[in-house]
Length: 143
Image (cartoon, rainbow, N blue to C red; front, side):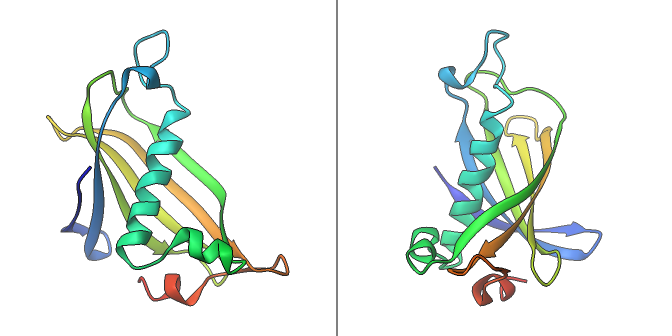
């Protein structure tokens, strides 16, 4: 599994896009021969964890410190299905949302033709040991 950064143009100017390489495994497909919609959540989550790790943010260490990163909203637009053996990348771009929330803009892009298979926005927050939401300093510094 390979990870990479590249700069791309966006509505907000040039942004750094993090990506992780994947390949569809047979057991991720449903009876129709396409990737089950729920599997995309796993792809996106794994890419977010790799992104955080690349920034020196250890998800497990945060949890040990009673800082729990949680998803509060997911928006996914399925564009086309992946099938068994497809190679693809999942991209991650961090986006501050508010004082208490952060987001990750993500795409699933099939490798051989660069077709966008899924667009997603995953919004999260951190919950401290007292159950209060906040954005950790390490995440605020990502922007």
